[in-house]
Amino acid sequence: MNYTQMAFRTEKVRWASLPKNESAKCSADTLLRAASGARGVPRRKVVLAYAGACGANLAEADRLWKAARYRQTQDAEPLKEKPKHIARVRDFADLHLALVDLYRKDGARSCQEVEELSGGRLSHSTVWRVLNEQTGRPTRDFVTHFARACGVRDVALSDWEQAWDRAEHRRTGGRKRNSRRPVIATSGSMIYLDRARDAGGQDMWKLSQTMAVPENELLERLEEIALGDCVLSSKELEAARSIQTSQRSARSLLALHAGWHRD
Image (cartoon, one colour):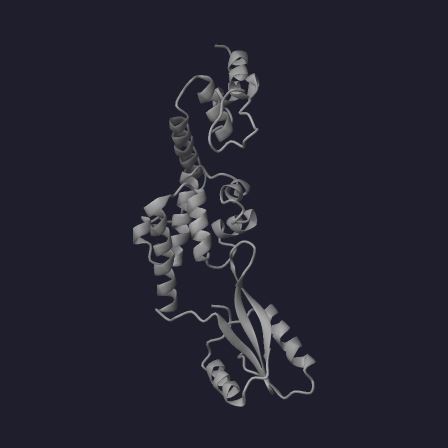
């Protein structure tokens, strides 16, 4: 066939991850450039369209595309350390390397594609931040949905969840995580930091207030605060202080030390 004939055949090519009413149509020029290798590894859609037009096995073409993309990304930006097998991951540094390696082995798709493959459970911005270490630790839900978006299935998926559990256990030293932490105690009320999730599934803290707190509970909470199990960013500290200041008629206590920071 010439490339014009192949381009005509690409209109008939279909595969599972292709949107329902979208064809794999590619122009003759696109197919020619893909075969030339002049621009590195072609896009996945072009490779599968090319293979489908020639009657080749799409699953094998997809496997070869991922292998080529993995080699390309490794050559362009080698990882600092060799990633451990997921069963040997022990901490969040190991887990980050494993996530990046998994992402590259799946073809290093765009973060927008990963968002789509996750069914919208992950935002592309969160994916980018996690991969580039521009955010804190990934949540367990993030690891689950990310691994699934990268093609991990069934029993192998639980290996990634268990890896997160081991990393979290090591980080906390086996301590049970507290989902609610007192920040400011006032006369008859307590202001808390409640653990929540943002749209991308990442940990966040939200200020809330509980009124009419019994005096004995206030004293107990203040003792907990004094032990130092409290984390605040500068913005959260500022917000907490503004709430405290607004309660002018109440006697308040700000139980935070200058050295405390987000764990």
